[in-house]
Amino acid sequence: MSDGRVRLFNPPTIAPPKGYSHVAEVRGGKLLFVAGQVAMDPAGSLVGPGDVRAQAEQVFRNLGAALAAGGATFSDLVKITIYLTDAAHLPEVREVRDRFVDGTRPPTSTAVQVVRLFRPEYLLEIDAVASVA
Image (cartoon, rainbow, N blue to C red; front, side, top):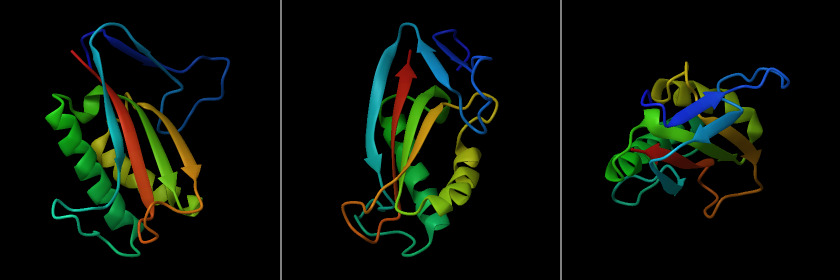
């Protein structure tokens, strides 16, 4: 986002992050909170059973649809939280994320390994916050 409402930055007193920003400062605009998205297609069926990359693709498509419905795009993201049932899959999820999110201005991000999600066949869930003009 280039309108000056959001400043994404990394303080020099913290180790440089890889693929995310440490701090998002939001000035003005409205915040859009997107509930956790899973690899569910519009009909409610699981996409990519056992395939974290396929599931991540669907999750980011769902996030994109939710952002669009609220008048936002991926460039408006200020925060994402990734919940994984196996943190070893984080590199694959990041590869998918990097096709959707601007790598020069990545949002703040948290990744957490969880015991399971609401249905055991889901391997990840991602929620998000965006700032919209």
